[in-house]
Length: 315
Image (cartoon, rainbow, N blue to C red; front, side, top):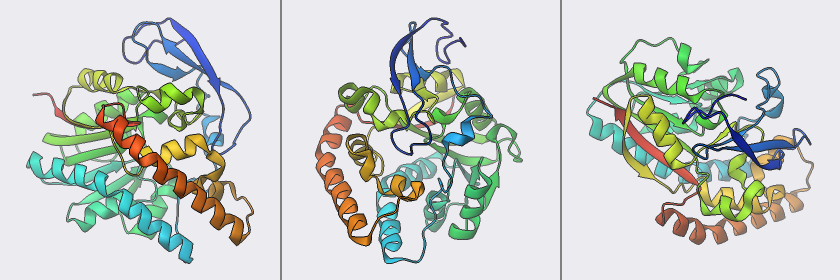
């Protein structure tokens, strides 16, 4: 068994098993284990690199069509991404650096598009050629396809680097953090967000918590795990945020009723009549609205289901 990413301990204990509740790419049960040294959770054994793509369904990257429903959903996605945009905009304004902002794991490119609308030179990077193509052609965002550790960019050129829900998908997130440190300007900002395995939702729901996203998430971080990795990579934490309007309420709603999740239903290509689709969407958004007060409370207690961190290079 590989050593722990955070403390290098080699002893782990089994916590529970979980499977793909969201996209149903497999019926296989995967084991979640806990480091006996620091408590970090991870998938064990992790899928082999050649097997991992099969757990990412086709059409995983969202591309809106011309329908009214897609138009409304796109407006909703822009709305809930607002707090991400504000968090990153503040970090970039305060750092005093100019230059490109690289959104790692950009998907279809909506987030860097919103940053560009605020005047930032945002660009994207994604390991998926389909995602990079969507970013270019759907959202007009310059996008690279590849690995951050091998990105064709000179050192100390980026004013900011963002990684929203990226590190938990990687076999070695330390390599991405090291690459980010090389690419950032001296006072540039790194913003990372991951699901928070110390949240109340995980304590209540266990293997049903959507933040595990088995088997696509290889490591399940708590805030202290992420901060330890950042410190080891040469970063100083400046700011933390435990609430995401996009992720926290929707994550709880999906944990409780994954069959209602609109994106998962669309990605899976489920055949639904317009009436059934409307009823399921209404049920999902009703559950999401009901989840909002709870997710605000857990975030206020620093136990939100996501953790977003702003960091800069340690002097």
